[in-house]
Image (cartoon, rainbow, N blue to C red; front, side, top):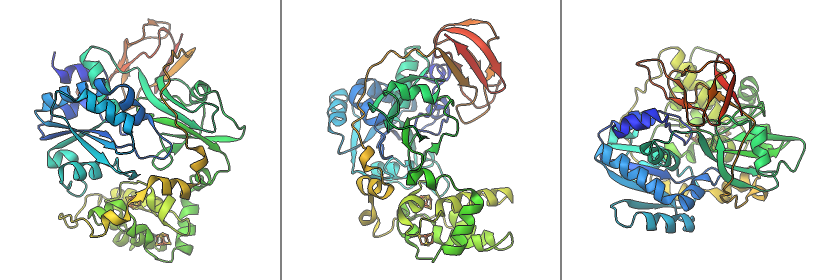
Length: 437
Ligand code: SF4
Ligand code: SF4
């Protein structure tokens, strides 16, 4: 069986957050296959820990992927992660893997940034790494490719559990385990009135229901006090954000001057997008086009704006509005040229943490090997880009850990799903399968 088929059968998707089915990327013909280990979300350490403790598996997965696509393998890693670098150096010894170092800035792990830093190539506006001969996979995805080659499907996700918990750590967690139970793996919370952020403070989201299950793309859980500034920033409605932005934006343009995509040479100008808030429908699209190349990194909203406004959210709204009227496709200049001051305007993660007010929550959160056995798991049928998978099991049926329980409709983009624990199927609802141990 080809690697593509094995990866498809194992249900491997982009573990960095996007959830794109990985077997599709393996079918590409490219020059570079890049492992993204340049983790940059504050407080998150799962990629660092994975590279430190599972470097051989990641490199094996990378070499398999590079071989399948006949490309050159490379790994991007933060210079500060010395233990991970030592482990990777050891693992790549007899191979031609290129190790590339990144300083500790945000967002070093952005695909456009990583492709530019490693290859010198600039992805065209609204393009993909594929457009410049590259595939980028998160290091956990490559670990999963290694497992898929051995016939082991994706049943766990590697996560950092940190913030207001007793023992911050990073470990493997069965897919479908409830967020609130995952916190117990780290000794439980240290406060009563808390909120949980999933997969990062900058690009993650606040979990509304702590019974929500973790999925293949969950990279971590961060517990913060309910009244923490970051949580408050995420609690506004679109209407509130629009109203404040319309009234208070003084067009200082700090949001644009620090925007990493703007500095990389793309025509993203959030301060101009903020002008769209002054229009109802007619006229707003003139300013909305300056949002189209935004990657939603959040720096403008959570770091740059001195008035604590919401330029990222204005960009997201503008992009949706343009798509709704059939104007979502970029029609501006194709040429991209990095800004002359790009390198001097990097945002160090430490400085970002100070701005967010989360320095006190920074913890080592090292890898702890655990045997996690939840009493039940709730496995969503859509954890990926594409069509939701269709159940292959029935209520009352016994399943074994690793057994195929759902697959995408014939001919449609999607990913297979496997039981993450052994037990009995207690319910099949519209969008999920519940298994009790
Ligand atoms: S940084 Fe804030 S105040 Fe300044 S232009 Fe951007 S949104 Fe407006
Ligand atoms: S979220 Fe803001 S800073 Fe980030 S790419 Fe979009 S406009 Fe630029």
